[in-house]
Length: 282
Image 1 (cartoon, rainbow, N blue to C red):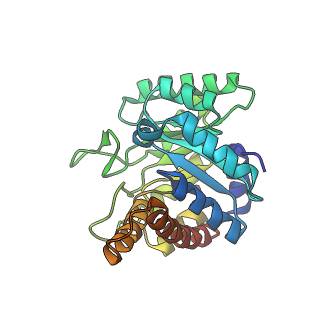
Image 2: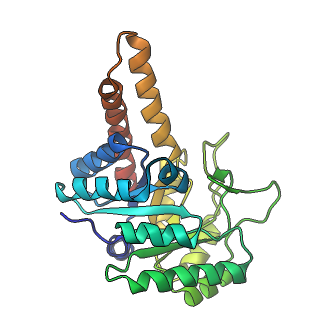
Image 3: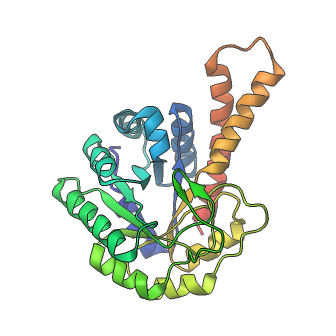
């Protein structure tokens, strides 16, 4: 089917108390793997690319691959700009066919974040396709492209600020900071579920959980029960793909065809994504 707007997927997830899995992809094989897993599980899916991935491959290229794969797939597929770091990148992604865009102004003061996000929502509304717009309030631990949290920095999302932020920006979804982090965790992450419950009560738009690689399944499920409608996975997919490719090459020094180790990577990502989709089903 044609690519779908992520707004439709998130609103359905919110109404029926599950979450849509959103998976960062770096190449064709990872994109194929995510869609294959979604087909096997009969679930909607969101493909994501970050600014560093786009720098490597370009929005037009990833949007074209997503379009070609989605048109042959029976499951709903959206493509999302993850952690968009400028208005210019957001408008480029929207123009190239992304059905969802995130503008990340979380490093800015509140007023500046609101102004930037509002500019993006107004831009998106001008497109006939009106791509879904996600924004972030608060910061996640770790590092995602150029966004890094300093030790001791107050990073959690404030429920009262979140209500104001959503109202003034007119976003479609809000990424919240409740204790997750980008990258791999050194220990079990401690999520602030009480804060998440407060955020669900304060904000009507679907909530998004970033930094989910390595978060225990039971914590992801509990987050979904408390209002998370979209769960992002990135680092663990990269690791699974790379490990499978490395094992293929280490096992046979005569392998030189990229399709050989690409296939192994694709299989590993498919298995991982299938599991994550089941977790997101609640």
